[in-house]
Length: 474
Ligand code: FAD
Image (cartoon, rainbow, N blue to C red; front, side, top):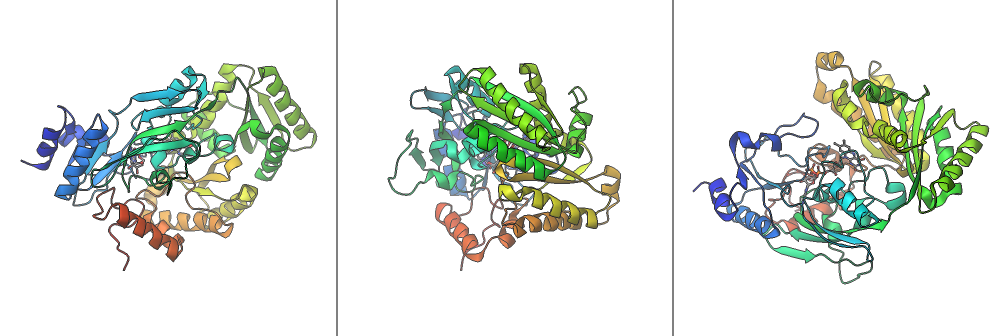
């Protein structure tokens, strides 16, 4: 019996796909990477997952865990190597197991789509705060495995801060039950943190206990025009001083980024013409008038101080949705307009303007024809710095791979010089493996390898993702 047939015999009917039926599972979100696989498995239960992993471990087949395939570093789809892995998709495991509103927790299957979990929390008068443009497709296991950030990190932290417990199938097929719904628990090593951000290289997350927060009753949302990032930083400081924890969102984009969103989705209304734009949101439990007035007062003071050029406060839900559509439209626009080389760096919040100046000058110097496209979770010091080439320019380059490396070296070097990171929220995937190797100090890199070897001694979990494949510590 061949291996896919062997797996079929362990699982319910229709849970193993081969041949052309696999095609949707082999391509990354950008449409730039197409891999190969032995088969795709679609388990429905944790026990199904354990059976697949045990069979793969016994036969020495690699496994690529897969969520909603919205990851941006090629981590959830296999490469095109000569030892095709088994894809393990969690997409049929989407049960909300239990909500405890008083404890502020929800137990879910790892294949639940993020927006379904957000809706379930709202139905219980609670908030699950992780929010990002891909929330209608990405899964809980995916956001945990990439430690996704998004647009609410300023107030609620990254996914890591919102996970209380996990259930994981380990690389030998054992099930680890860490589904604790506790705020305090110092019983030994905090194992769950090993799997958060591990990009499927240490085990397969099958369930999670997520932290819920009180549901804000009012929002005040503004679209603000500024002349440069230094003034945006001053506004951030002003809002944090006067609004404190009510400030949940502070997102920056340049005019080039906004223009491409509008070009790609012309239905969205166009804000005033300024060099830089901010999406700002406050959230609170009080009456809507209270925080709207608070935002109005802060923006009025900023206008008088010459910090901002223009500001519109959303007057209703439709206008608020329109502002958010501009922000959430950036990823799609960047996939479809020209050929974008994206970077996802972070620096201290206070250094964002310095990073933008340095990286822009260095890129313009080296690639005068390229366009710089910036969208930033500025309140977290996270900048998506894109260098866009027209399709015509890109196809005329003799050495596209060399150009990718040159842009990466410039941009990541500028982040490094400010004490930053070359990957803030998208992870390493297959794309930045060499970058991790060269930009991490020796002791840190070897510790990661030892950790990988301890959890996954035969290297079957998502090989070639995060760390170079089977590089043993001597
Ligand atoms: P996949 O892409 O399928 O997989 C991602 C990684 O997780 C892979 O390594 C995979 O092997 C692993 N994995 C998936 N499920 C499991 C599991 N159950 N157990 C173990 N490993 C698993 N990211 C941000 O941080 N902030 C943003 O604001 C943001 N915005 C985005 C907007 C758009 C439009 C898009 C397309 C992406 C955006 N992202 C953002 C990228 C983000 O990483 C993903 O959207 C999300 O975190 C990945 O979830 P997924 O279910 O699609 O995982």
